[in-house]
Each structure stands twice: as structure tokens, then as C-alpha cells.
Image (cartoon, rainbow, N blue to C red; front, side):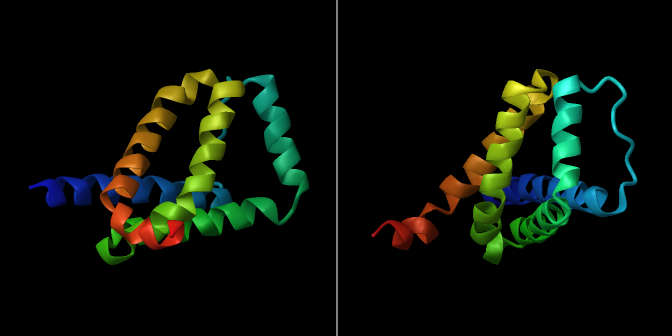
Length: 125
């Protein structure tokens, strides 16, 4: 039962990151109109670095797909960890309205990583 719940949650988590990555490439979701000024400056700064957003998009898409596949879930979680830290810090300091969703995503990522802790053990030896 736990494996089925983890699969469904991992599937939804992966879809969130796949959607986010695809949106960075194809820009099919409009930007919120009530975005804080500090967030607008961050988006402009990221846009000035031409290669940054495509790189983040590709990592989000690949990481999202890997999280969905149980065999590669641990690898996908490691790929998405730095992006998740960036999302969390962005919402803490610039857009607190998105913090609840960021915390839920962080909790799911933590659950995935804790569930796969045996696969990470070799990294810390």
C-alpha cells in the first residue's frame, strides 16, 4: 500500500516538474499579474542569462521523468534537490504567497529521498 501511495505522489510530483520545465521552454502559462516587484527583477535577471532557464527546464523535465520511474527515483530526486532549494528560498524571501506549495513539494521530495536513503549510503562513505 505504501508503495502505491508513494508512486502516485511521485507521479504527481514528477508531473509538476515536467510541466514547469515545459513551461519554461514553450511559455504556455501566463505570468501572474500580481507578481511582486522583487520577483519581476529576478525573472528579468534570469532572462538576461540566456542559457540558465533552458538548463533549469531540461533538469526539471529529466528529473521529473526520473522521479516517476521507480528504478530511477533516487537519481531524479538528487537532480531536483538544488532546484527545490532555489524554489524554497525564492518563496521565503521574495514571494511568500507560494510558500505553502513549496513546502509541500519539499516534503514530498524529502519523503522520496528518505525512502531511497539506502541508495545514497554509498555517497557518504
